[in-house]
Image (cartoon, rainbow, N blue to C red):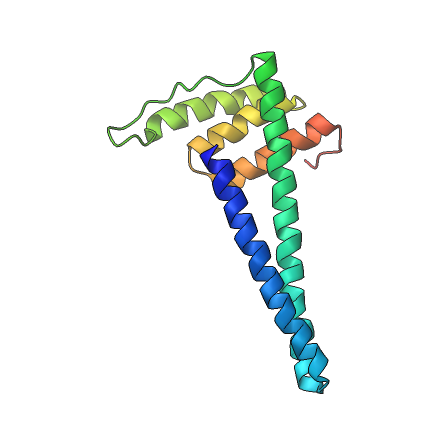
Length: 150
């Protein structure tokens, strides 16, 4: 729940910022001078890119959460078997061992979205966020029946 709340607060702050910046862009365009209009258009492009990025991120999170709920209903969510340090952080060797197992499962069943989902979690636990995101994107694509690039 805490993660959802922080996500929505961050999204709300970003939307407020985009509106604020967008209004400044409109004011620049209304001045009519060539330089101000050019800057106004440039200023409007940034919030549009930001809104697109926020929308794509929100879609990704919603789809990943739907897969989590589906896998949980099937009883297939991975069990947290990771060793923790006294600080509460995940032991790196433990994360690497689980990752090796998850990678082998995925290689054995490359068309199963469930194995990619569990691999994404293993990447996340190993603190490899870019690969975790790619693995989750692949799990979502496989689940949705979309073509997956090799």
